[in-house]
Image 1 (tube, rainbow, N blue to C red):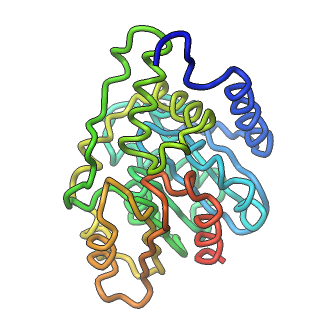
Image 2 (image 1 turned 180 degrees about the vertical axis):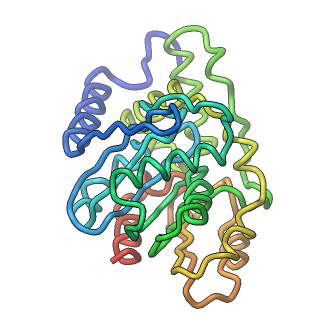
Length: 286
């Protein structure tokens, strides 16, 4: 594409901004500080607490197509993790343990330290969710969506590009669109203005390096310490993992665990196949 052929029309981008604003209007903001770091949480809905953790280079908007459906059954609690989105930058040590402890401590200020929660995490947020469940306890059910930390080969074919090196607005959007196709969404036609707006906002606000953590393999050892029901969920074409390999490995013959694959979806399954994902999550946490 060239500068005379924008990726998205102005009216498409305006619609995306309105959609984000409409979902934001459904939520209440809560700023909570722990050990010098402010974490911004958003809540929505009524019912038992369900915590949703976003992925790397993400924000709470990774769940933009899930809030309306899930908030009809639960009280959703969605943070921008420390050093992501609208939250403050993590104070030293800026590592995963401190990120998880800060997230858990600020959640406890909002819902109570002994309150049982449902907990779901996407991608890097899946690793964070498992670590938080081990750190905090009181997790009634755990859903890991396209979770990182399995340590097995990825299926990604296209290399990511460094969008920070783009020269100009159009080149930046082209790079971000390439990365959405390479990693996040299976069907290129689903890379719409909303996906671009969510992705761009999150990438530009990320101050935490999660990639090396996501590529590691600590999840199995963490899961071995859990007894609660766990759902492992992937898009059929998730390039970050082979569901047919990781699913049985993580279920490990445990009857309280299950893995599912959603057809016609990539890594960002809760966006690309929102209705199917909402139904699976609602049934599991129901």
